[in-house]
Length: 183
Ligand code: HEC
Image (cartoon, rainbow, N blue to C red; front, side):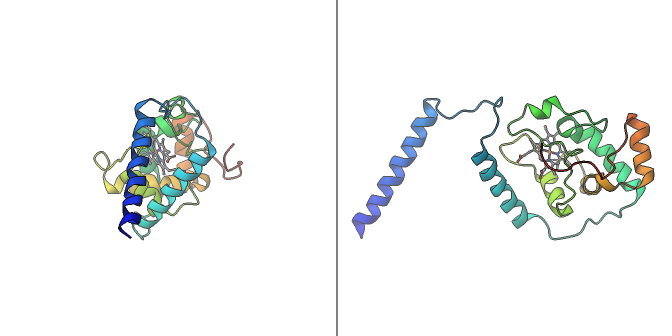
């Protein structure tokens, strides 16, 4: 039994040394100008979904869904999020595309299927080892719930909010009929 345990410890130590050696000799690619491999997407996506699902607060959005709050959410998005996730004028973000992994375009690929508690949680705490910052020091919870409400409803915004979108950008808001999913 003792030998068996020593064998396990030995294997773990050798494994750790191999990983350290591989890293030390520059064999782990760390450049951001590459496309994440499909296994990497899968593994990172699995870990993110598992973590967010387990830790997001189990609650509804406490902010009432009305034109005023959705417009505030839209303004928060423009100031804090559009630089990476794409602006309301529907231009993709070159900055966001240069990150690894790239920032998803939340206008053309909205998170309308996700529970709002999860979008709020990701916004508040960020995603480690990606460009997604934690906003807890810069936005109040109320602002984060408002931007969450806005993101959830991008394909189905009420007329007054769509009008504000058009007035401020000259471009129509999504009408909910456009193709969804990833290109
Ligand atoms: C500096 C760039 C950057 C900014 C600014 C930024 N994000 Fe992100 N965000 C990212 C990246 C990169 C990812 C993808 C992370 C991943 O793939 O795991 C991401 C992912 C997300 C996701 C998960 C999307 C999904 O498909 O599940 C949400 C929700 C999100 N961001 C919301 C926001 C909100 C809200 C703001 C503004 C308050 C914001 N982000 C600002 C870079 C950014």
